[in-house]
Structures are given as structure tokens and as C-alpha cells.
Length: 573
Image: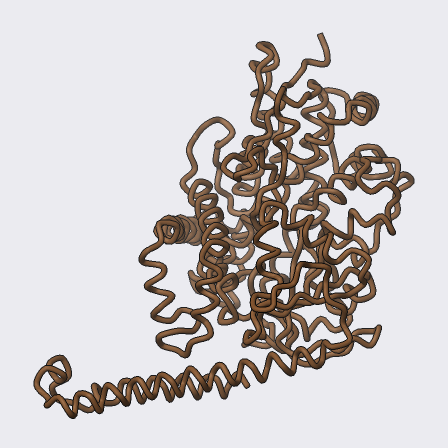
């Protein structure tokens, strides 16, 4: 059906443009031709438009009907159904609490479906909460479930504009244009930086130095009893750390030195999310029309972009990211000490002796590893310290473990911070990840028809979603799930990635999982060696989460401020 839709779009374009293409007087043709001929050509254009639009809508209706037939045995999620708009009105009404909404509408259902606009097959989603189902599409039938194509909808289209084709956005398996070779190549080379030797050498030194700088910044506010925005500084901490570890670039955003890269990244992220949400219904309607007027990236899309202030911010930020990423690539390639470097970008450039990578390829690599290495760990640390500040008994127990196992001045290795050596620290971190996962939901798109282990038929082209946020709060898996109880994880047994998919599962499991855990534990220990933390007055009732790709702390119901205001207290005289 996809190829048929392209045929209708092409036919529309040819019929509409033919009178102009074959005229030697194109610009003035309608002005000089007689009125009868002009009316005929205009009628032909209108007729071609009607035929193409009707044809495309018919094909979309056929695909949607087939999807609904294959999914007839799958129960609907518990949303307020609208005859014309499906789940969209209910979702929009809950846009300030989307993750709770997804949890509520799917609770008690191992698998369920959401159905949106009637003629749109991309508006049908499956939510999978049962671990065996998650295991099936993330691991067992991995090649059939990949990232959605850029041409599918506005969400994926603009994500690719922002992040390009890097390890985070690149498709794998049978649905990938290159069969998944590009994604596999990036993952294989990148894996070289996550060696145990690197943890205990380069990474340990960088994390410890940056965490110590963050600890030093707390002295003034602690002495004066002032509130301190921990989330902003956690983002600076992880930014400075990954810029050095991944790209060999020394930055000091913790010290107040502005970072064009970090500022542009945050602006691109926010404007991207605001635009795809606010303009989503309009863009969705445009995709139902044939190209070049409609469709993904068509003329109507471009006109919508021109009138949007958010798009101006987004495009300006993307240009800055592009130039800054290319600067990093050029600096790495021209570094006379390249052979001695062990950062991620250098690993790829060193491989160019065997295979030359394009600047675009390396730029996309840089962009993808920033969101993977900075945002997720900063969000985790923010929620971890929110948990500590709001559960004093948990904070007291953790401080005692830190004093006993990691006294001031001790060098913290990967083994020293392990679950066996510091079980309570590990329990606090895993409770944070369970209740506040940095990536609260994710989705894959089926390439071909498939059958799940429970007999559920999944049509090709259907988006399949899994919800770490909902799975971590499921009362059927965790007793009193909203209670923070680090003892759940003592003694520690590594959870199944399909029951606890915070770091994904299967071949796309997060490469930097161990690094992120090590970084978060080390930073927490360094800060708790000297300080305890309280939530600033008036903040408790304001705390929620931000509606971004990663789940940061938000302290505004209107989503216009993302601060974690804590008051640091000196623990030792």
C-alpha cells in the first residue's frame, strides 16, 4: 500500500504540473492564454487534486481497516473514546500528566490498543506491559521491530532533523534502508570506550574531578542557608563530563563558562517537543494529503514552519549544533596527538585508516551521544536527590553507608561502588530508576506482520510501545509501588531487562548503562560526603516532570521552569 500511495502522489504532481512543464511561456501562461483554455487547465488541476486526495484517503482507509481487523482481539485501553478523534481528546486533556495517563489507561491489561484518527494507520498504537511481550519485540524478533521511518510522521521527521542518523535514531533490522549495517557499525566501534579499564582510569578521574567541583559550589549556599538548583548543576556536571570523555573537549559549564553547544541543545530539545505537540494535529492532517502539497515535509508543512516562532528557534539551534559538532570533528581529525586519545570521537576517527567516515556521520554520532550521555544521567541524579530530600530516613541510612564505605578522600572505583560493596546506595539508585525512569516510554514499529507469544497479531507498520514508567509502578509487580524502599534491592539480583526495561533490552540495550550507574553513584557519594539536602520551602507541591524525551524534574504546572531547589546542609563541622 505504501508504494501505491506514492504512485497517487506522483500522479497528482504530474497532472498538476504538466501544463506548466510543457509550456514555453510558463510564468505568464495563465495571463496570455484565452479564458476557456485557462479554465480547462485549472479544472484539470482541481480534478487531479481530488483524484489524488481521494485515492490516498482510500488507500489509508484500506490499511487502517486491515490493521483494525488484525487487532480486533486486542482490548482497547481505558481511555475516553471519541468517535472522530479516537484517543486524542483524552490524551490532550491529560497532556500535563501523560505518563500517568498511559499508565492508567493500560493498567490491568497485558496488551491493549489506542486508536486515533479513523483514516490514519499511523494513529494506531499497541501498548505492551507484559514482560514476555516486551522481550518478544525487543529481543526475540528484534529484526522486525525498529525505529519508525522519518517519513512516518512529524515526531520522527523532526527528531531526525535534530539528531540526524546516529545510534539513537538509526534504524536496524529488515526495516532499515541499509539492513541495519550503519547502526551495527556505530554500536560496535562505540563499545570500545566502555571497557572496565576505562572506568577505573579516564572515566573515574573525570567524574571525580567534576563531582568535586560541584561539591565545592555548595559551600556558599550551605553557609548562607540558600536554595540551590541541583538539576541545573547536574546537567552541567554531566555535560562537562561527557564532553571530555566522549569528545576530548574540556568545558567548564559548572564554573559558569557558557557552552554554545549545551545552550543550543536544550533550545532544540524544548522547541522540538513544543512544536510536535502544539502543531501535531495540524501536521497530522497535512500528512493525509498527497505530496508535494501534503505529506511529510510537503508544501503545507513548510508553510506551517514559516509561521511558527518555535520552528525559528529549532532551526537556529540546529544550525548551531551542526557547526559546533563539525568543529569537534575537525579538531579531532587535525589533532597531532590523535593516536594517544581514548575518547569516543577519537575511536571513530582512528578507525578511518580502514574506512573513511563522512563529516555528517561523525556529526550525527556526536549529537546522539550527547542526549544519551548527558540528559539521562542528569535526570536520574535530579530525581535521586529529590528522593533523598523528601525521604529523610533514606538519606540518613545512605549517608551512614557513605561514611563507612567511602570516607572523604577515598578514591572511588567501579568495584568500590558496586552493589556488593554499597548495597544501600545501589538500592536508592534502582528505586529512583524504577519510579522515575529517565526515558519513561519508548516505541518500535513493526516492519512486517507478526504474532506475539500470546497469539496477538501485530500488523506491519504498527507502532508498539513499552512503558518503563508504568511497569515500575505496577502494583502487581511491586508491593506499595509508590513507596521508596531501597531494601527491595538488597540482596541485589540484576532485574530482567524485560521486566525492568529502563536501559532498553535485547541488542539495543544501552551501551552506557554501566557508565551511567557508575557516574551517578560516584557523584552522589562525593556530594553526600559533605552535605545533606532538604527540599526548599514551597517546592513540594510544585514538583512534577517535564514533557521532554527524557524525564527531567519540572517545578511548574505550566512547564515553564525546570528547577530542583534544594537547601544543602553541612554534615561535618
